[in-house]
Length: 310
Image 1: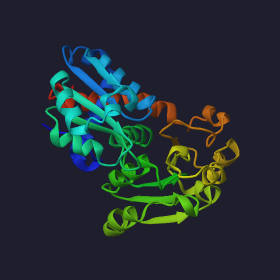
Image 2 (image 1 turned 135 degrees about the vertical axis):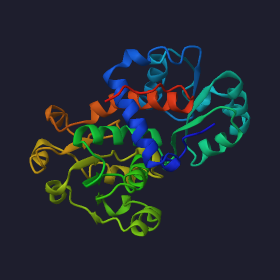
Image 3 (image 1 turned 120 degrees about the vertical axis):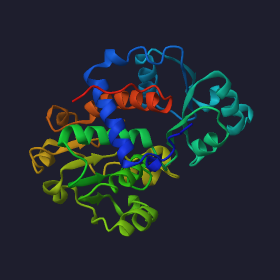
Image 4 (image 1 turned 120 degrees about the horizontal axis):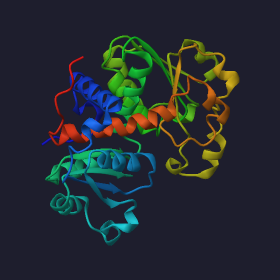
């Protein structure tokens, strides 16, 4: 039995195979429609989510399975003081696979230690978000045709943005990757990302504050929102929330084949006018999330069929 807690739980070869499966699902969803008939996915979401929770549910329903679970800690026995270990032991009696989101870093890892079913980390605090990373990788590969030899600009909240941390960890395993880390001083990427991932691997990176000066260099621009829920005081949030706003004028500085990604939800860091630009890939990215999670569920349950010959 395998879990997905950290983006590095899968090798590069396994990720490439999973992305190929997700691409095959996108091309012919009907081929996979009944493969999870009789299987149940438990969605244990201890903090709010729209896209991630619904995309997991859509993925399982598309595969012919069913879904049970809760969408907030208040509606679970956690409100009565039940431990994660006990919750996952009970859920293992009811479901075949579980997706867990939790505000505390390491909670899905703890659940996996006691689970009798595969556990998928659907986001733990400001730490990791591996299924979003798989979604990001699929979108980049479909837009650029590769996952190596790219200049990636990560912009906004790089301190608390778990999607950013997971994406850096994953892309760091591919050749020819360069990062521009675009953020205000207060929201710079955590030291562990620099000291444990980028520097040991000799990956070129720059920490900068100007989005405009970075735009001409980028193959991928990954925008993030400043997350109000991660701040300890509202004054800091208000001061920093509008630091970067992507507009058509700023888009004009970018390459013609650049792609703009965003894990969503956005607040005002990308104006609505940018949505009409063909380089805007964030709604395509949201759709890819369903295909990736379908592929992941099939893989962890051992139900993935042989893919068609190319």
